[in-house]
Length: 327
Image (cartoon, rainbow, N blue to C red):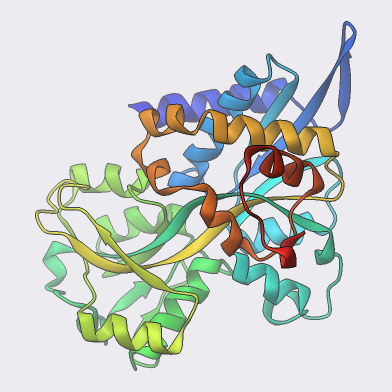
């Protein structure tokens, strides 16, 4: 299937590139590391697509490596210390937490070096349960054994926050199973369900739904209004009917903004090439996978973190407005 092919491509890219700079003839090649999420997520597939696109769009001047990640928390922590050209994804809100030295980043430094490149598809929260579980709505999760997302990940934090806002935080038994193992745990009946947070369609869930009868839970209008009233980071999103096998109705859930970021270690020309290539090739990316359709230049203003000078150069050339607070 396509995901397997993309994984193979990612491995080939990884073997063919490393952090640093190399010269080929008279033209320097920049080694770029891309990192997003686990190999079962749509964000990992996005990184593979971006890697292929950047190498082709720059005639090999950018040489990419795609690395698997356990999620946004790991990505942000690595950005504080990683040298060279490093591109990673995270929700902008997590960068605010890191710069404030709160939560998983308590007492840590180095996050002021992170810079905005562009927006990527927003994170869609999926609550997945087995059809045999009898769980029909979010409130039915009370008393169940549920995997809230990968241990220590942004998804785990968001899932617990959402359930807490709905008054279910103390009623759900959380299982500490890594997200890569969640589909098997559900398939084998070891858990009643799990949460996965990624742009939809999620490749791992696509694969699971072809072999196992699952339900993706919708939130009621009242539940979503309660979440939005207490959590300004969340917004509404609908997963269209037919996105996954057996999903005959639209799923109303919540989403979180997310972006692609670099650091001040990335030189201006590389940042310019990356951002210019991304926006010029965006339509081609949409043709490969529809989740890119919703990514538009106006979303960059929601990233909050200061823009990379090389990225700003492109946005000014293209006439794309960037808030003064991000310059």
